[in-house]
Length: 147
Image 1 (cartoon, one colour):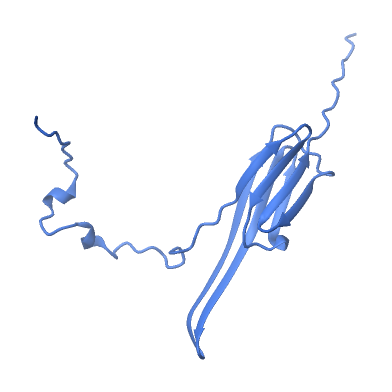
Image 2: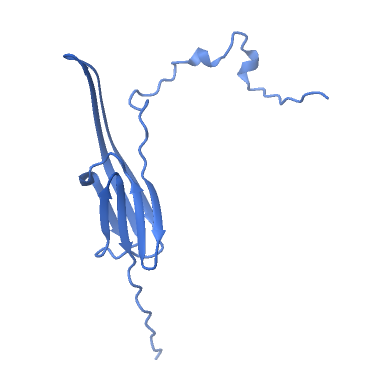
């Protein structure tokens, strides 16, 4: 039985007799030095709903609690944090490498019910922000008499 192969007219590897054509462009498109080897920080979250409370666990490692802001507007919750990392490597009196990273990360999400801002609580321990967000008591519907 014959082997079938798909023909790709844009495949440059078939016309490159000297090896990998990617070597031709290696180093041509250079990413900025600040982005190399820097992990992109993201806020990863777990949201749980109980009878009258939402519980949110947000992973924000390496951030001071003073640099975290939480805002609540109705049923929308926003978490933002500023990260600051400074690293300096010395050998004797000479500085071999000095790196600084400053950035801001934010996450906004919408819940199914409005949140009671007065009873909401936030606690930050060991890189995890824990939000306790009680649901607002739903207003009883009022019936109007038609005249």
